[in-house]
Length: 481
Image 1: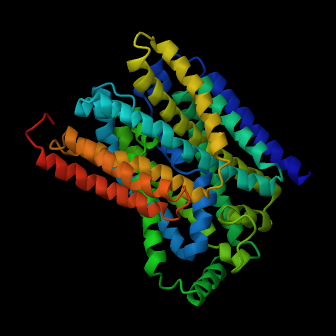
Image 2: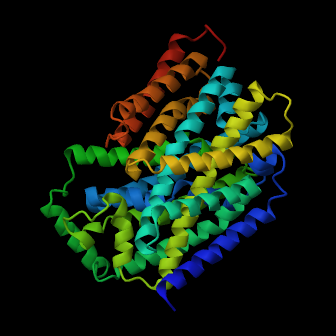
Image 3: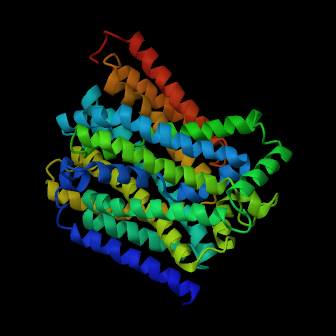
């Protein structure tokens, strides 16, 4: 069978599945509670795999693994391990159960609502709402860019066509089904990702360019010695650590990731989900970064045409993979990307409808109409993301701006509000604004071209924590906590 036909058949099967899931659950998300938190009855497997598929998209597989592997060689695998240990295991241990209990107790469906409830500030809710909607768009756009690079190489189709396909897929899933549909789809997509990554690791390692695990590691180690990557020091070491910290701890403050904790059924499911999420991240992120770390074995010292965003797609194209596996890999990347896009879009748009539109201009709107409005906003968000994706910013930088600004604004006040009664409204405002400006200003001044996005993201998170603590202490007793 023709290679292109085989790949398109595999993708077609996946597309039919996604459409079926959306239609099946289209009648189970008619009110806002069902559309956003799904009745708070999700089990461990569904919650953990939904978390993982929202975490790891084509941005990681294509942008981060390729770019990090090219810059740091085998050291880049540490980023994947960090994502599993800090971004999954520690995140679930620290945040999942506390967040589940607090949001259930106060009937909270979004991060802006959490801030309003905790700090008694409607203005804080509005600020959080605007930041989330505006700055999740570049993250969404980076997902488009990650997938289009691999499709344009392997399928030979125009990048614009590819972006339109993924936009339609994610929009259909969301508009038809909402939260429950995305959870059910993520459950299956999670298994597709695990199977696909495992097969991909094995076949890339066995490719002629790598020549087996022992030979590949030996050749990469020799390359790293000759190019001053062993040991890694100075600016490259700082950049690697910044990437590890941002992609691991940055998820703690992202509303679409925190949102996964809201719907977990009970504490037992949280404990089980912690294990499942960690194993998933170790395989998917560790494997993805390991593949990217071998890029110099395929291209030597010469960066291929298209830049870092095309490293992994060209590796897959040159590795001589079976046609069926190429189709599975594309479905893996599409699955990961649609899952992430769905989570981002649902979070951003439900936040606008619940926390901006309803409290200000549509106070009497009922739950069913609010869910319908959210569906319309999802379409708008997908279209805007498509246009932003055409801006010539590399994937890694585009994503780091989004993560840095959002997590820099929200991680500290969110985490401290769960564990420290001493944080007050003034401290939370100081942390939010300080973190926001630390990440936002360098990006704007550089015209969104700075390569130091991960570093500024880490600084934003650190400064936000310091401001929350110091200002809360200085203003203690002057206002209710």
